[in-house]
Image 1 (tube, helix red, strand yellow):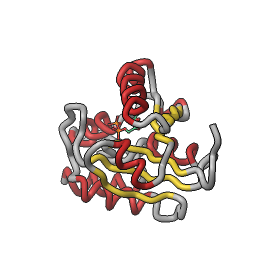
Image 2: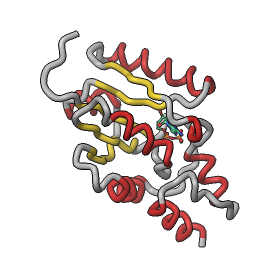
Image 3: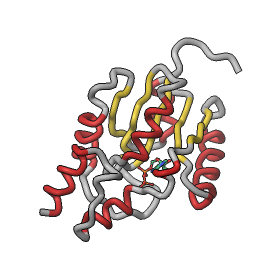
Image 4: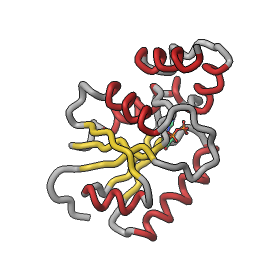
Length: 165
Ligand code: ADP
């Protein structure tokens, strides 16, 4: 496969809220890409109860990655491959935590390739400390008053405290 020009990748997800696991995946992606678009899905393909509205998740992401000029945070709706093509991203970044992620991620990657055969999905594994971490777990623990300060950045912690105060 020939690559031309800068490597542009898209990292889609619900980011409700962004965790240190997501941040770890972003940092790793920047090791091999020139630009990364962190894309908040306007709707979820998996049944998840949301905590923050999409606009606020985006606001949080922009604050968290504000110091990194190669990262852009946007919201999108519709098919991911259509969005990726529109912004000129041929690489989809996904995180793999455990075997439990594999089934769904594998199906999505194959489907996305069917929909656009020039797209490549790249799976990254996080630092081991984050391999059990999910945004849904953070939401649950925070809602019950537990300490999530080792799983999210201070900015997100503030938002969670405000949300549950
Ligand atoms: P979650 O599954 O935590 O609700 P998202 O839907 O926002 O989060 O996930 C977006 C992508 O980020 C998915 O590919 C997911 O596997 C990955 N991801 C989420 N948390 C982590 C983590 N702790 N380490 C690595 N990848 C992660």
